[in-house]
Image 1 (cartoon, rainbow, N blue to C red):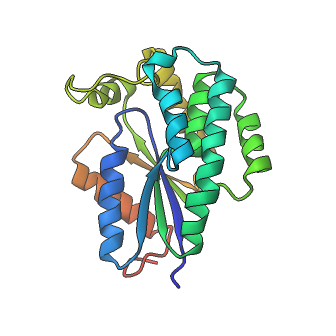
Image 2 (cartoon, rainbow, N blue to C red):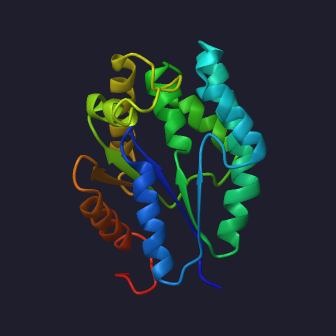
Length: 215
């Protein structure tokens, strides 16, 4: 059985994670790998319910700790029931947002202690970190405009936060990447999607054995 792998995609709003996950999925599938894509918040029936609470505009303001524990609750379901079983079966799991989103959003942007967030995850979800995290970098102003899809989409509760909040998210992601360069793959996300995909694939091939790739 092929060795499974867990890869997460992170970045500010509108960084193009969904597009790049789909392109990487197709590339890995072309190499004969079994790939599943998933997302957070969500990924399970319970997680999807929690997602509606976290992102719904009708909820209004939530306490930072409330956001964190809702994220941890859906992540527990997601990791134990979807991610780990798939990896143990030799599948590649590509996840749109994961642990580092809690660090960036509830930690750096909301003001909770990032080390405490990490400690809580380590206590309840041992072995939770992915093999690699692709961090798509884009200026918050540009990303938020992208997230509106030319005005066709209303911002959700998190996207509707003030620009300063999203700048703290951006800075938080960069801080995380500096502290864990062995896990993070940084890619500029404001160019042509196909070229961005090529950069992601090239970076992953240097880190993770991919059949037919550069080991």
